[in-house]
Image (cartoon, rainbow, N blue to C red):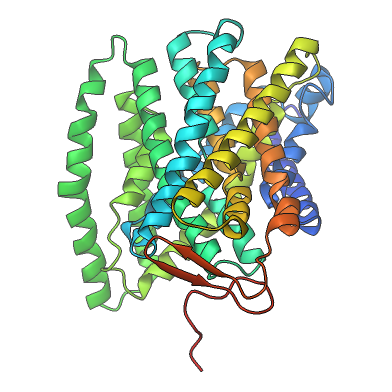
Length: 426
């Protein structure tokens, strides 16, 4: 670039954001989530596409940490929103089916991931083999809640019974996955770190001190008719402080952002809630694509041997079969018929950006090596890209069917498309 670090930084930001927006738009035109295009944009600057000299020209070494820091702000915002949007309300309706699908889609791939990881640990675990095995199991059990929500919205299925059921099951599954990942990260980094003992204290303070303070601040803002925008600086300060604390404690900053979102008051915000979330999402929409572009630049399959290719195929195969099979079995055991369990299984196989975040954390923490990171990113892209086509192939319900499950019935309209869970007014 120019040789001036500041100028190179701004050029890199503009290049990365421009490429992310372009490839994200192309992905959407092809019926894919934007994250697929954003990762592909990063692949153009990866070692398997351009030479080391070319990569240095596009993203100079001194610029990468600055770009990564900016991307991490977008990631922290994203994790805050995930924590805020996951709440207990998703279990109020159709609890039996929700828990059945969630349990099947987590437990089966978790066990399958353990079984796959045991023989691979000697090759792809740079450090603790047990931590590697635990991580692979957790990574296999993930469903990308945000990407799934976008897929359902794009297809008009967000308010349909199977759509809402799948989204609720994904929320439960992702919550369990984040908790398990936090445990794995804590286990991997616990040796000699006395600060880990303070994690329960941090969690207690978040619930007993931070949450009431946030409720008071939100209530006062509402009483004074302050615009929702006035709350954004407070939230940004809170998120960043929580991220700093969890990093200091020895667990990744994403858990601090997630925890701050989880303790945010819901009812106190009232009408301000959508505005506040919209404002925070705008930050994420601008900066989060940088994270996936950077993630794509680290993927390198160019040096793979035949054994590496076979391992990649095994990773993809186990991920798809265990996740879809577990979700299908859970749905059937919960009382859903085949015609509803099949599209549920297809949807739960979506991994997308959540998987990329998790494997990036694992690479950063030294749980996996560069080769296995590349495999997992490819798996995330493949499983996300296949959701749309498979949903079109298997996603329709038979005409006049009624989906019976534990706790009630899910009606279907005569056109074969899932009926809405509640009739529209008017």
